Each structure stands twice: as C-alpha cells, then as structure tokens.
Image (cartoon, rainbow, N blue to C red; front, side, top):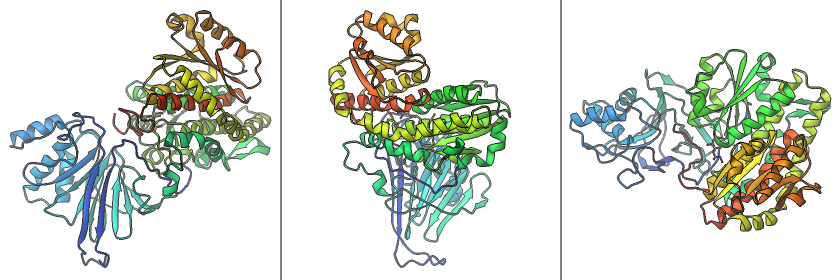
Length: 584
Ligand code: AGP
C-alpha cells in the first residue's frame, strides 16, 4: 500500500468495539518500578452472532469460578465442543454465546496455577475461529490481556494509558500513537508497559507505534444531521482527494505510489479478478467494464463470500484486486488468503490505512476519502470508482491505451468534483421526489453497461437505510421477467445518460411507461427528450461514459437518505447492519 500515515475513523454506529482505559498513577515510573493502575475498564458493543441481544448474552462474560472478564469480537467455531468439555468438567454456563466459553476455558487453565497471560495463550491455542479478545482478572488488576486472530485490534498508546479497540475511532480523541496487533499475537499490558508475543510459540514481538493522521474533528458530524449526509456532501472533496497528486496529465499517466513496487508484475498481468462485498462489489463491477474497455484485460468480479468457497481458476498471471472501505471485511480477508495461496499478485483498494487488508496485500491504493462513519457507504464508493479509473489508466497505458486517452480520462476525473457539486444543488428537488415516492413498497433500479452496477448500488442504498425492497437489474433483462411486476404501483429508477446504449435504454424506459409503471430517470443534463418519457428526471452533468457511475451514484444516495428520513429510519445505524462486517 502507499507509504502513508495511518488514517483512522471514529464510528458511533453499532460496531463491535471494546475499549480498555488503563490509566496509571501520573508519577508512575516505567523503569520497572511498577506504578499502581488507577482504572481498568472494559466495554463492548455487541453485534449478535450466537444468541439474541439479551442481558445474559451481553459482554463482558465471566466464568463460574472467579470473576474473569472477557469481551470478544469474532466467532468461536468450535465453541460447542469446548463448551461440552467444560461442562463435563463442572463449568456452569449462563449465556447462549460462543464468547462465554473463553472465560470458562481460561479459568479451567488458571486453576492449575498458570499465570493469566499463559492461561489465555494456552486457551486460545485450543480455539478455532476468529477473535479480537480482551481479558481482565479482578484478582490480578495489574494486567490486561489482548489477543487477535481474524478480527482487528489496535492499541492506542497514550500519556500513561493504553486504549484498546477493534477500530481506531474511539482512540483518536485520546492519542494519535497506535500499535496494531497482527493475527496470532497477544499483548500483555501492565504498569511496566506492553509486551507482545506470538500465541503459538510465545515469541516476543517488537512493534513500533504508528501515528494517526485523522483528528476528532474529521469524524464529528460537522453540523450535518447525520454522518451519511455529511459524507454525501463531502464527495466533491473526497473524489478530489482520491486523485490528488496521482496523475501526470501531460503524459496521460496515473501515478499510484502504492503500485510502483509491483509495476513490472502489473505489466505482465493477463487477467484480473476483483473480490469485494456490498457496495465495494458494485464498485468492482464498474471496474470490470473500465478494465476491459480501456486496458483490454479480461476481468471478472466475484462476491468475496462466493469466491472463498468456489474453485476460481487463478494463477500467477492473475492479479486479484480486493476492494474494501474498512479493510476488515471477513469474507474479503479470507478471499485474499486464498488468492495468495495460489501465488496471485494481490492488490488492495482500501480506505482505512493500516487495516488488515491494507497489511495483507502485496500492494494497493488508499482511497484517501477520510473517515466514513455512516453504515451506508457513499464517499467510499465514489472514491473506489475514482481509484479504479486511475488504475485503469495505469494498466491501460502499460498496454494499448494512448496518451490522448489517458489524458482525457485524467482531465475528466479532475472535472468531477465540480460536477458533483452541481448535483448536490438538486437536494431539495430530490427530497420532493422522495416525498412523492416514499410510500411505494417496491422499486426496480435499472441500468445498462457502466450503469448496471449503478442500479445495483442505488437499490442497495435504498434498502439498507429505508428497509424498502429495491432490486437492481440490467435494463436489457426487463423482458426476461421483471416487466411482469410493473404496474402503476411499481416504480422504477432508470439510468439513461446519453451514452453508447442511450437508445436501448430509452426503448426499455418506454416499455415501463407502456405498463403504467412510474419512472424516475437519471439523465444527462440538456437531454430534451427524456422528460417526455419519464415521470420525473434527476439530471447529472455530461461526462465520459466510464465515469458516469461516479455522478449517477450521488442523487440516489440523496434519494435513499430522504426516503429513510421520511420513514423515520435510523440513517446512520440501520437495523441489523454494522459498518464493518468482521465476522462471516
Ligand atoms: C454498503 O453501503 C454497506 N455498508 C456494505 O454493503 C459494505 O459495502 C460492505 O459490507 C463491504 O464493506 P467494506 O467495503 O468495508 O469491505
């Protein structure tokens, strides 16, 4: 990845985050003379995997023989086997969670007189699955244990205090110095400081701290009603930041520092496989069209949760691109491990610097769009598309793309922030549209070619924050089924910019109108025809066809936001969802 300082992000959305504030006596010396720990605390925001969201299942969990306290993110896959063994040994369980097994397991080992660090380490060696875990024992308040495998953990190193969390966001208001634990590592924190060892072999690990670039202000709402709205309006700056200093227009070249070390390997790449989830997957679908049309590279895109269980045909001629805002998505991480197993060059497109995916990949490009807090991804999506366009120029110019074409793409990318500003001035008009359409229970989102992914992404935005059923579809597929649903009660959002498939799109749009289906068209400003066909039109400025998804996304983010407000939904914290899906 680019050599960049860490940029973290603060979240207030339901994300499994646990903190430990361990403040030493101010005058405590770290030369081995132990100070006295003033405060040690554990907190946890639970995203239920095993057992419902009940008091009994809330963390921290304790065992039954001492008050050991455990909080955990991840999934203990062999918890049932461990639980049965511990119950046979007389342990009594209080919850339905997998996490509680850890507390009893550590207690069972402690009973032999083993120290807490050793007990945790030996216990975790019996665990199969993923964990980001914190353990404290009131009987030994001078220490705290943190360990991770497959679920992120970062340690904030403050002035006489440590703050541990699964994410940088709760840390940055206390310190900008952080240490990342890697998978298979365990940290023991005492008044003398922090020691890191490997769980498997107790090998000491030396790890320098890194500095966080983001400040608390970066992550506050900045006067907006919701993080999502703030992040929608940050998109002109975000799309600008994603390309800042990353091109040489006069030579029609992109300049992506994080790819320079693998430039030679990139030039030999014969195929690209993109893996991602959710919105990142939709970005990958746009990237597929870009790479095929402008770099001439056969490209396929797979949902990471499918990729990891398929038998994808990969070889050293394949470059795998993992796209992830958080850099912590479990399915994407597992897919990267699989791709590396096959000897592929694995690249990352990630927003959170220093995240797991950023550190796992051979190289990559950071989005630089700043912290994205709202669960519904907005500026990260347009940032991903911007970076994919730059990567297309990089790969294309290593192949048949001309200087002129490279220059045209780069110059049009530079014009996008102003064009997004223009779209954002339509917020009031889009809010009115939302009022007119918010009562409909179903929507079809339709688009062709570059805007088929726009349809998928627009539908995802609406359903994930307003809980309204919306389905993205290639508009050419209408006659193969979806048209049967269309009547006056079934509206469509239709992408019909003036592009290479405009005429085809118009005829599809007319098929909807002929069945009485209401249509909101997303069209190119100045198109004098579309308004005669569609019921309503949202205008986007003219741009290159390959870049229209960046503009087309913005009005539909606003549309989804306004509908969600009208439906009194929790825009930043939609039910059942988390900002980063760190479990399978
Ligand atoms: C998008 O609005 C959702 N929040 C979700 O689909 C998200 O894109 C997906 O979980 C992938 O997250 P990532 O980009 O952090 O890997």
